[in-house]
Image (cartoon, rainbow, N blue to C red; front, side, top):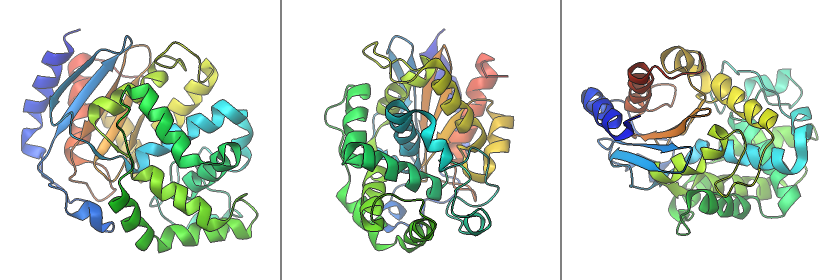
Length: 303
């Protein structure tokens, strides 16, 4: 497969869509990002990486981090987390409070904010330092020891995190948090602030394409667990636009409001695309289009 050639074709095809949409406005540190950037990378099963555009430019991973936190909890704790968070699409915005009251403080899935807070809470219990544990894992899988938190983004999210605090306190009132709310919020905001490039994220997500095997050949997840993570990414990974993403792209994917999307083709490769302009659901306009073009061009999807 000529990955480099395919990426160049895709980049040319979506050039007119780069810059469309709006950058995330509710996090001031993200609102200043230039929407006219675009990068895309592919990492194959052997860890070879190909890229185009701004593929080595670091950006704020935001909700993409939720995939890796979930994998780390499953690796350490098995399926116990599913007693505290569901696996169904939410149908509501990623920071919605509505369903929590109807469903007794149990979030619909681990990729909406409420569900990610529960996962972070469990990782904190298991490791005593959830955000640093995640950062260390991402450094190892991406082979980039320079990965770091972005203090400005973390502070910005903390100062404008009232909705996430409300979600956390509401779940705590139902007994669905093990650690103090401020501790959970701190680690959640810091994990979302990690800066990575398309190259870094394509490599870091490789264990999902390798059915649970890490970059060094060690096993992080069983094949069954890797299948589960990919399945939840497909059905819940792009907020309340997961159906449209599956229709257009046909791959497990996880997006973040920093403009990045990671997508997995099990047994073949992992992709990451980044362009900060978001649609009304919080997904990268050019990023979704690029993944759509890639799967159409290659004929590769899970369907």
